[in-house]
Image 1 (cartoon, helix red, strand yellow):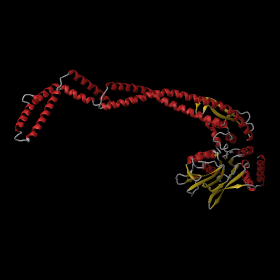
Image 2 (cartoon, rainbow, N blue to C red; image 1 turned 90 degrees about the vertical axis):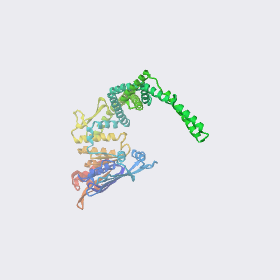
Image 3 (cartoon, rainbow, N blue to C red; image 1 turned 45 degrees about the horizontal axis):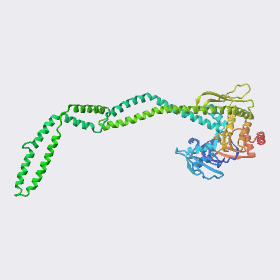
Image 4 (tube, rainbow, N blue to C red; image 1 turned 90 degrees about the horizontal axis):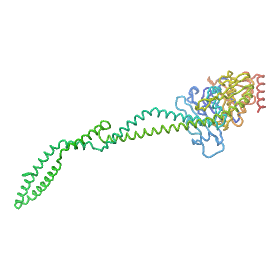
Length: 567
């Protein structure tokens, strides 16, 4: 329940305080006095969009504060507890203080809940559970097919409301899967073409059985085979020079023998002899190595090497500059092939998944259709009964369900129809000509759906309902019936009604007025609670524009007596 509302620097309101109580509260005042600004302040307090144009001229900011008292199990308390804004332990009743500042200079405004900074998004989420505002153009919602479906589903109860949400999500899930499958199918030809290419490339590279550095080794061997005769001739000649008659080894042996004969005369020659002997051994090893490197010309081996080099060269032109790059390409091709093969499996599993999702959506929609048909008949009876109390005794109300292809709203369209007068065929509520009739129909639907337990229902949680001139176009006995209905709605909860009709205002438990005056050459509005003679005077003003008129006062007093007797 809203216990207190404080508004500063909002339009013509410099400072105003409103302390509504439990039950029904009404706010009245002349046109332009600022009734709409009070509703705007409430909207800001609930997380509504901020309009800097509403900030009072000359002020740097507008400020709205509200104090709520809520039971511990209230949905808003649950949200606040999750956000760390209230104590974890149950405490019976919870007091919630909300403050919001809107800056004129374009800076982001500030939101505080129980003294802690909060976001507008959090405030909006909590605000939807704290209170709900129904505006004077509430009936315009009825032009929306989605709104008409929601009215029926909310009337049907929380299970139907939840079922409708499940149908929506199931249809959306099927649509997402369908789009994904369409994308997969659109790429199926390209996928198969790419798979064929990859299969050929993987086979071509794999069958070659490449080894790292193979082409360099083969090129070296091929060059040796190509020049086998020249190599053999040169190596043989070099070997003869070393090992042949009068060759290097024989001459070294002679030199060693000569030095040995002289070592007695010069012992230092021993070292030279040793070095020459080592050189002789090394030279002989070289000669043997040269002899071993002689190759025979082998045309078959040379041809095989050249053929293998040609094969590797073809692979290099396609896949990389060397064997390592070609083998790396092979790994990438194998990975891509596996990915494309998996996509083929995804297509198959996706078709199965789509079938399951479509079946689930159809099953849920069938249950929802059954629920809607049952609830539709009850809603017709309830609305007609309420319209009789709202001075439309002959009105007929109809809930028309028309089968259609499954969509997010279910397997049928929902159209609310009404015939306000005898002999008329029911027409869509959006085509009802009389504004007064339409307001009462919208109010009846609003009252009925708000009395259900469909979440999030402020009434179900004993929260605050705000009606901003929903009685537009209504007068006479109908206005009195609307006032009585709104008054009864406050029982067990809290209702705030902004109205220009005295018949409606008279049924409130508390009456507040907003009056505009001039102070220091500036317009300023104040909110005051009226009772007793002051309330009679305000109702007289609303009745005749003459607050001192004796006849108007008598009529005002009569309205209060009638409303009191009806409680």
